[in-house]
Length: 146
Image (cartoon, rainbow, N blue to C red; front, side, top):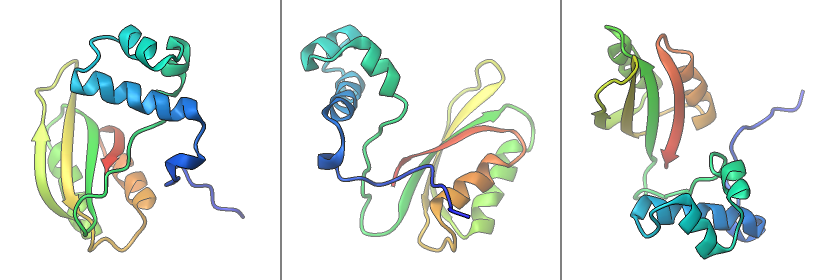
Protein backbone atom coordinates (compact mmCIF):
# COMPACT_ATOMS: atom_id res chain seq x y z
CA UNK A 1 0.00 0.00 0.00
CA UNK A 2 1.31 3.44 -0.91
CA UNK A 3 1.49 5.80 2.07
CA UNK A 4 -0.31 9.07 1.35
CA UNK A 5 1.21 12.20 2.83
CA UNK A 6 -0.86 15.25 3.60
CA UNK A 7 1.99 17.77 3.71
CA UNK A 8 5.06 18.23 1.55
CA UNK A 9 8.01 20.59 1.60
CA UNK A 10 8.40 21.88 -1.93
CA UNK A 11 10.89 24.39 -3.26
CA UNK A 12 8.99 27.58 -4.14
CA UNK A 13 10.46 27.55 -7.66
CA UNK A 14 8.52 24.33 -8.38
CA UNK A 15 5.14 25.86 -7.45
CA UNK A 16 2.78 27.61 -9.88
CA UNK A 17 3.06 31.40 -9.69
CA UNK A 18 -0.51 31.72 -8.43
CA UNK A 19 0.37 29.77 -5.26
CA UNK A 20 3.34 32.07 -4.58
CA UNK A 21 1.17 35.14 -5.15
CA UNK A 22 -1.51 33.84 -2.76
CA UNK A 23 1.18 33.30 -0.10
CA UNK A 24 2.40 36.86 -0.69
CA UNK A 25 -1.15 38.21 -0.47
CA UNK A 26 -1.56 36.46 2.90
CA UNK A 27 1.72 38.04 4.05
CA UNK A 28 0.55 41.49 2.96
CA UNK A 29 -2.65 41.02 4.96
CA UNK A 30 -0.88 39.65 8.06
CA UNK A 31 1.65 42.50 8.16
CA UNK A 32 -0.94 45.19 7.47
CA UNK A 33 0.69 46.21 4.19
CA UNK A 34 -2.69 45.51 2.60
CA UNK A 35 -5.85 46.34 4.51
CA UNK A 36 -8.21 44.05 2.62
CA UNK A 37 -8.22 40.96 0.42
CA UNK A 38 -9.31 43.17 -2.46
CA UNK A 39 -6.29 45.46 -2.00
CA UNK A 40 -3.84 42.54 -1.70
CA UNK A 41 -5.17 40.73 -4.75
CA UNK A 42 -5.19 43.89 -6.88
CA UNK A 43 -1.58 44.67 -5.92
CA UNK A 44 -0.51 41.17 -6.94
CA UNK A 45 -2.76 41.03 -10.00
CA UNK A 46 -4.61 37.87 -8.99
CA UNK A 47 -8.32 37.22 -8.71
CA UNK A 48 -10.07 37.15 -5.37
CA UNK A 49 -11.47 33.73 -6.26
CA UNK A 50 -7.93 32.36 -6.73
CA UNK A 51 -6.96 33.82 -3.36
CA UNK A 52 -9.91 32.18 -1.61
CA UNK A 53 -9.35 28.90 -3.46
CA UNK A 54 -5.73 28.50 -2.28
CA UNK A 55 -5.46 30.61 0.89
CA UNK A 56 -5.91 27.69 3.30
CA UNK A 57 -3.59 25.40 1.35
CA UNK A 58 -0.38 27.47 1.43
CA UNK A 59 1.70 28.70 4.31
CA UNK A 60 5.41 29.55 4.43
CA UNK A 61 7.83 27.10 5.98
CA UNK A 62 9.96 28.77 8.63
CA UNK A 63 13.07 26.93 9.72
CA UNK A 64 13.23 27.87 13.40
CA UNK A 65 16.82 27.75 14.75
CA UNK A 66 18.78 24.58 14.01
CA UNK A 67 16.65 22.22 16.09
CA UNK A 68 13.15 21.06 15.41
CA UNK A 69 11.13 23.85 16.96
CA UNK A 70 7.57 23.49 15.74
CA UNK A 71 4.65 25.86 16.29
CA UNK A 72 1.26 24.18 16.51
CA UNK A 73 -2.13 25.88 16.36
CA UNK A 74 -4.81 23.81 18.05
CA UNK A 75 -8.52 24.57 18.21
CA UNK A 76 -10.08 22.91 21.25
CA UNK A 77 -13.47 22.60 22.87
CA UNK A 78 -13.59 24.71 26.02
CA UNK A 79 -14.14 21.87 28.50
CA UNK A 80 -12.32 21.07 31.76
CA UNK A 81 -9.29 18.80 31.29
CA UNK A 82 -8.98 19.13 27.51
CA UNK A 83 -5.94 21.42 27.57
CA UNK A 84 -4.18 19.29 30.20
CA UNK A 85 -4.86 16.10 28.25
CA UNK A 86 -3.54 17.60 25.02
CA UNK A 87 -0.38 18.95 26.71
CA UNK A 88 0.28 15.56 28.31
CA UNK A 89 0.13 14.11 24.82
CA UNK A 90 3.05 16.34 23.77
CA UNK A 91 5.07 14.93 26.69
CA UNK A 92 4.18 11.33 25.80
CA UNK A 93 5.41 11.98 22.25
CA UNK A 94 8.73 13.29 23.60
CA UNK A 95 8.18 16.95 22.69
CA UNK A 96 9.43 19.64 25.06
CA UNK A 97 6.90 22.47 25.29
CA UNK A 98 8.56 25.89 25.05
CA UNK A 99 5.57 28.25 24.86
CA UNK A 100 1.81 28.09 25.31
CA UNK A 101 -0.61 30.85 24.38
CA UNK A 102 -4.34 30.30 24.72
CA UNK A 103 -6.88 32.83 23.51
CA UNK A 104 -10.08 33.46 25.45
CA UNK A 105 -12.63 30.89 24.26
CA UNK A 106 -15.31 32.06 21.86
CA UNK A 107 -18.35 30.00 20.96
CA UNK A 108 -17.09 27.12 23.09
CA UNK A 109 -13.80 26.89 21.18
CA UNK A 110 -10.35 28.07 22.32
CA UNK A 111 -7.33 28.56 20.06
CA UNK A 112 -4.09 27.35 21.64
CA UNK A 113 -0.67 28.02 20.12
CA UNK A 114 2.06 25.68 21.33
CA UNK A 115 5.75 26.07 20.54
CA UNK A 116 7.60 22.80 21.10
CA UNK A 117 11.07 21.38 20.64
CA UNK A 118 10.33 18.23 18.67
CA UNK A 119 13.92 16.98 18.46
CA UNK A 120 13.06 14.21 20.96
CA UNK A 121 9.96 13.06 19.09
CA UNK A 122 10.38 9.57 17.67
CA UNK A 123 7.76 9.86 14.92
CA UNK A 124 7.01 12.01 11.89
CA UNK A 125 5.25 15.34 12.37
CA UNK A 126 2.32 13.97 10.35
CA UNK A 127 1.97 11.07 12.81
CA UNK A 128 2.21 13.46 15.76
CA UNK A 129 -0.44 15.72 14.20
CA UNK A 130 -2.79 12.77 13.78
CA UNK A 131 -2.28 11.72 17.41
CA UNK A 132 -2.98 15.24 18.68
CA UNK A 133 -6.04 15.50 16.43
CA UNK A 134 -7.37 12.29 17.98
CA UNK A 135 -7.20 13.77 21.51
CA UNK A 136 -10.51 14.40 23.28
CA UNK A 137 -11.73 17.92 22.62
CA UNK A 138 -9.33 18.75 19.77
CA UNK A 139 -11.30 20.23 16.87
CA UNK A 140 -8.37 21.08 14.59
CA UNK A 141 -4.57 20.97 14.76
CA UNK A 142 -2.10 22.43 12.28
CA UNK A 143 1.60 23.16 12.15
CA UNK A 144 2.09 26.89 11.58
CA UNK A 145 5.89 26.86 11.41
CA UNK A 146 8.68 24.44 11.95
